[in-house]
Length: 257
Image 1 (cartoon, helix red, strand yellow):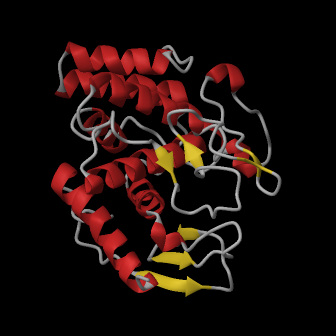
Image 2 (spheres, rainbow, N blue to C red; image 1 turned 60 degrees about the vertical axis):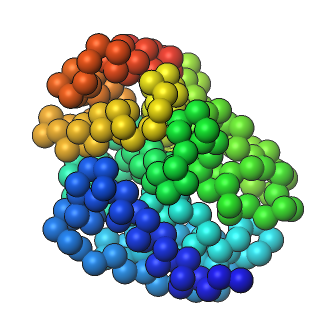
Image 3 (cartoon, rainbow, N blue to C red; image 1 turned 30 degrees about the horizontal axis):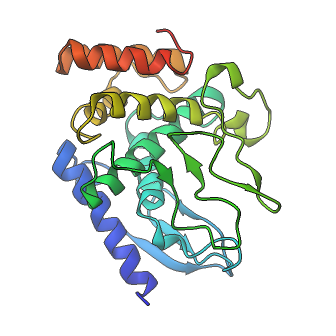
């Protein structure tokens, strides 16, 4: 069995390489920030998180969750929260919070795909597929390809994510549904990346990264604002094929910028 510390080291390194080699970003702060991690956090702790200074990994309980160092996409997801905090600073509530969560899923998925040399068509677009034990009736924490289908389990319940604005969840829980409604922009990215084909980071990923760094992306941005900026950034960097794919991807989830 690979030691948790080795898995954590590999995950942090894979995330650093992805941001460096694809977006020329030098760590989370783009200034060589050291990527630190603590493993075996707590007692059967069922999560991993970025605390603003380092990654923290729980071992899971062995019944529902396996150790969180096993999922590169989840590690990259948490590290991307640091990138978002230091760039757009998206407020962690309602649609801006759901965008914050979605951006982390998008870059987490791309990091895992990059590490595995997978095209958009080859990838499963699952987040945290390595985490659930065999006793759980589910395949992952979230599905970008089919939001709402990741699990349906007596203990965990049913995956609540919508994939379209028609199913948007209005709730006061979860900071206004940040982990729920993130399924909508997640699915938009999936539609765009698979429509364009090839590697997700080559075109769709650059559009998302450009938008994350766009000074017009304010902390309280909603889905429609983010969508409009992705179209504008697609026009700035790429051709009409990419612009059309981005526009149609958003329309596919009920957002018409």
